Image 1 (cartoon, rainbow, N blue to C red):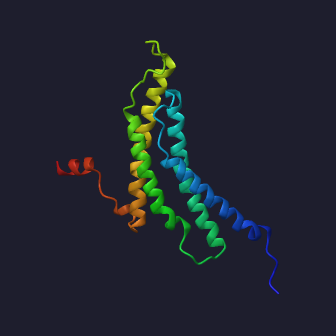
Image 2 (tube, rainbow, N blue to C red):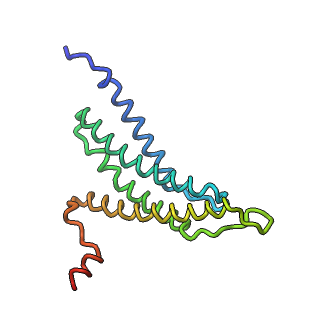
Image 3 (tube, rainbow, N blue to C red):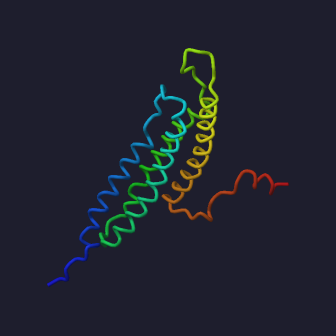
Length: 167
């Protein structure tokens, strides 16, 4: 007779299933277009939500890999299997955020007054999009390199470093 399963061993497949569902739902958030008629106060939260979904997807995919190793499934790791999908979703996120970088301050109201909080929120949204796009470009580069099996040490020198070395 085999030993009875521990609670961990018994429930681990349920946890993995739930986490995989979470990753897929996060992917939906990442690639969803920003509504053009969105109130300017909400752009920052939409962008933050996309970044959170990307970060959570990455960490959850890695966690699933570790948990599946506990099950000794012997299959290709979930992380490696889903990495190309994450990269494609991050590229979509970049394109969406790029539209927000130069977001116009639209006339939501009939009057000609630009409210202070509206102006600040549009500026925050633009800056959040800038920061997130810089982060996502670097992340895509790192993940593509990882997918190809390249070591981070093999990373190309920056253009600034190359120019400085020429002098």
